[in-house]
Figure (cartoon, helix red, strand yellow):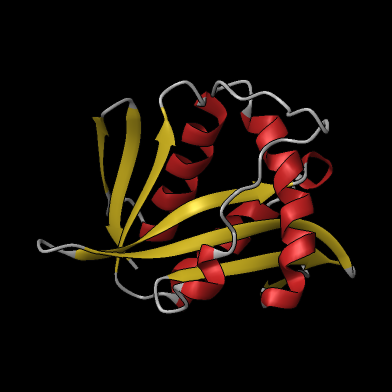
Length: 158
């Protein structure tokens, strides 16, 4: 499967913001979110990805020169530990169930070696199935899973 993962620079912010509208639309069935007076969902804080360059990593995904999604990665540093997390992950519906999401996730895990924590909200069963299967295959079953604060969380080392 051919696809590109492109680290999004600030010039890509508009493309990412546009794709984010589709993501929020899909996600709106799980969270209380409505469109605003202009018919769009509220702006996601994308600017943080270019301010906190050592802790936030935005990527666009292309297949056959067409945008098919994005992934936002965070490095979270606490007094107890440091770990990477998928902040947001989105593949347009047209391209789902073709293996691109799983392949993109594996490449992102390979780019950022170390401790990972990936979570899904409890009501999003399709995301839970996707991440559980993807992480299980990537780690060959070497991950831990827990439920905490209404979220299903997988921990593993890439």
